[in-house]
Image 1 (tube, rainbow, N blue to C red):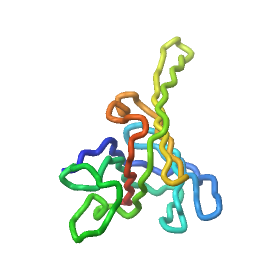
Image 2 (image 1 turned 90 degrees about the vertical axis):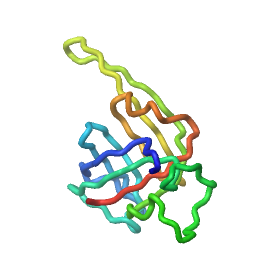
Image 3 (image 1 turned 45 degrees about the horizontal axis):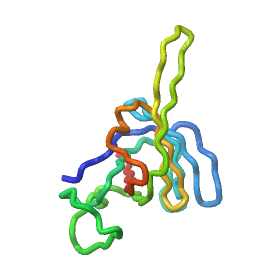
Image 4 (image 1 turned 30 degrees about the vertical axis):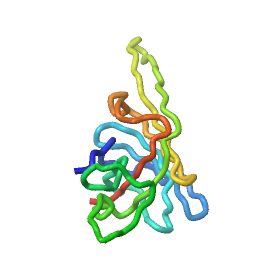
Length: 146
């Protein structure tokens, strides 16, 4: 089975910023992760209140084997078969942000930035979710609605 770097269920929050054929959505997950994601809404429609499952993976191969750098539908089953919207891109920045609340308690959040052919993603939350990510990593983002 292909290993997922990240998997969570999100609920679409505000109606995102709209560009020509692309919408920047904001969503919060069941595990308190925050995400901004540019979605080609002309291809995959999303609206306020939608819930969706999102996976970040290194490969579409179900056995977890390394990807060849391109995708061919060679009649074999892949991770993509279970999802409706798939993008391939590159992780270009990982950063941490520490803040203190009014009681003096500090909180650290990690931010993961990726670009999928110019469509951007920011994933923000608990630093433990970033343990498997590396700078310049190639990623597949897969989305499906339940």
